[in-house]
Image 1 (cartoon, rainbow, N blue to C red):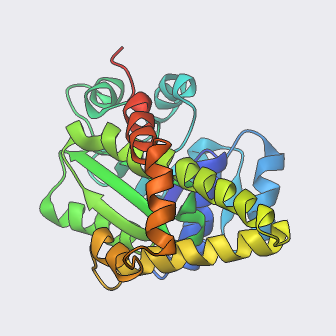
Image 2: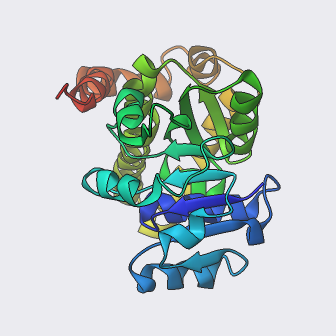
Length: 266
């Protein structure tokens, strides 16, 4: 399978790096394009097998899957440039343009009453290290195509095919959620410095602790509360800390932050 990525910004380049490390596709079967050559230099340095070009049309020509990773205001001109070149019978088009749903994509790609198989994708930046949580919603796809796309993105972390109504929620939990998790790590690191560790050691400790906590859920399939109970002894240190956090609005602030992040209707 050949994959074209249009756009070498943060998420486009992260996808290229992740794919190049996976077994889902060969590095030489990945092409990424960007109008700014300097962005492509980073791709060449970190994923030398990936093909790069400043010509979107060259990148798209022989691809089985075309992934669009540009800013929202660049989408319509890009579609105008590419849609006459696309083979709607063979090529799958995936958009990672946040906030542009399938209805709008259908309008943009409609060509003489026809349109390609379309996917709306929401990954997060951890796709670069193959640890993304990616959401997919499709229109016009067969179950086999859905499974094919799922299998690719499951190699880059985990992936979930969802109804389009859940895509904004997925955006908040997993894409915005990367920032929220990192802000927690940052706050915990600052606490570690206050407790006496150097900043680098505190961050190392906190990051590994977060990784370990996640593994209990992802690998062991545990429930958060059952794992909390295992380290929370009566009148112990952990329960004191948890209660102090809740008194200061820990759970409430997280939920309110998630709700505030939901994109507003246009």
